[in-house]
Structure formats: structure tokens, C-alpha cells
Length: 168
Image (cartoon, rainbow, N blue to C red; front, side):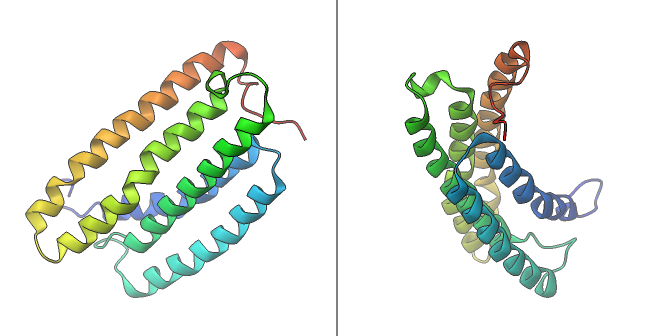
């Protein structure tokens, strides 16, 4: 809550736009048509799940947990595949590539959120205090995620941001 008002509408709004933006990032990072096609099909599945939650949950008072869990699964899966794809693209060590660090940041943040949000959803019905205490794990993952992204961006800006974008 912010100033006594529910702020879940902010999270739910973010959930509606985050996956398409992340899929666009993946699209810009790889030549893999298979990965791009899977992204489109998974986005279609996610739209169906989100529409179901919109029809059954309050936008301002309930978090769209199923959408959050599905997004975490999709993002983790696609970035793991992207990591394997990147490992086969270059002859230099993968950790020299900013794409590797971006992908790793997404896997490290979204991967643990799958069991974490599932556990929080389960505990919310049984022990709200414990469920709210588990959010500290999300805060730690959040700091790790953005620290890695800031590190990558700080190295990319002097290079003219060209190290992450494919042409074509």
C-alpha cells in the first residue's frame, strides 16, 4: 500500500507490458528464428492466461499471480535457451559478451521467482506474515538483477551500444 491505497495496479500494469518488452529484447539479441517463434507462441499463451485473470481478479486489489509465474517461466526458459545459443555463436569466451551478462541477469532474477511466487501464493492463504517476510528474497534478487544490468550498460555505453544489437 502507498499512502493507504492499494498499489497492486502498478504491478499488474507492469505485468501487462513487461513480457512483450523482454521478448523484443530477446529478438534484438539473437538470430535464432526458433527462439523468436517460441516467444510469439508463448506470448499468445500468456495473453490467454492474463485475460483469464482480468476476468476473475480485481486489477487494483489482487496480484495477477498466474501471469507473474508464467512470465517468470517464459523469461527464464527463453534466456536459458539464449545462453546456449550464445555459447555456440562466438569463438571467444561467452563471459566476454554483454549479451551473456544480460541473459544471466534475467535468469538469476526470474528463475528463483517461479518457486518463490508459488510459495508466497500458497502461504498467503495460510500464513500472511510469513508470506510477506519472503518478499525480502525478491528484494535481494531485484538488487542483483539491476546491478548486473547497470554493469553491462556502463560497459556498453562507451562502445556505442553496438555490442548487443544484431543487424538484419
